Length: 268
Ligand SMILES: [Zn+2]
Image (cartoon, rainbow, N blue to C red; front, side, top):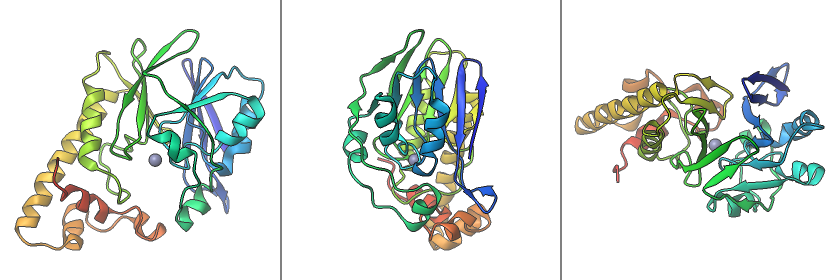
């Protein structure tokens, strides 16, 4: 399924595989001034290409290598002959076939490896300039695109919500907080977040700061529980009430326990 709407000059394209009448998990791409930011998941590649047919499209950028952000790369290269770019760290990962969990194959699908160019520090379109800001944490190769004049921040999967309660085991929660701080400190008076889940957050700086404060608060609590000798399972119950439902759906790949484990790793 694909749903699109316009937020000023930015077209939001929300995509997700439909299963028994409902969308399993939304992912989003954004089209602005001929620039496509992320390409959705493999299952929705044809729908995205259909939407883009006849529209102004020069270049696509992947914020990171995950399958729900690069899924239509191959098809878009073939059909529209456009250039696709990603960070120096992302490019080799996008160029190889990923190992995915069964739930990832079901929800998003398996991306065809593609050769992408290396992103420069800025991307220019006809009317806008986008700064490429390294924002690792969700994964090491993650970047965000920021249009300073408009205050637009395309944040991929850096910002999920103000209070994330589940994550993948490889995520670095303190690096996520540091990357968010990098965006908070940018010059624009107002930041608008365009997230990889398709949420547009008008009060972007405030939302990022609340997430940073939340992570710092969780960190203090988890280390206190560690001093008290609690197990990670008991810490999950103390901090979140119970394990996230996502843990059951993803065989534990996305879980609250991973948040606790990430908080218990040394900060540097
Ligand atoms: Zn991701």
